[in-house]
Length: 268
Image (cartoon, rainbow, N blue to C red; front, side, top):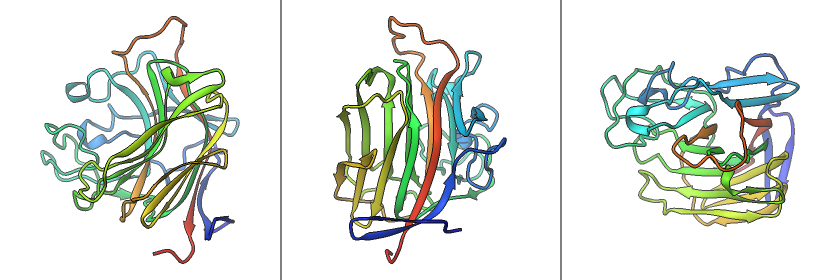
């Protein structure tokens, strides 16, 4: 349902999806609370999260196990995604095949909940200063064919890059299996306290992707995937990384205030 509009430059956008995380339960029409479950299992990839006071808190807890230790080491993750698509058990077909040796270990019913083709997308969230953690919102191709697999990284923030009044915010595109996309990614230094709420946004249009933070343009990429994409919203903990000198108790929390998706008017 369209509930509002926004204009950026010469392009007009209509609000298409919105989650303010005001309910007691996760919106199951928008989010799947697992991380790439085809390569592991729904149980091992299950997100841990808390809803309350109008926020989503994606959590890494002390007893949480690695999501796919055979192929991704000790990485722990809590992730929400807006689609899942994979081949049959034992196949090499599936979204974001992060390791050449992985095969589908648990069959998944196809679910494409929100997979736009161009638009404006916004996340209001707080990052973590934990040097072992990273938070992110990224988009991946639905991979109805293997070439439809590029990534648009709206934002990613490693805790090691967070200082009281400065942070490096990653943004850009990665090709993965898309031969039409060149890798163009940058961790942009910004004067902000990433531990407080900020709005990270991207305008994805034919031939370009424009990135902004708190309404201020930050980066433009003059190339863009041209197929439906889904969203990945997550917090990672890299257990093999140095913990730093300061204590960082559990749970490790990525606090999200809102997510919005706008569709462009008249853009095909």
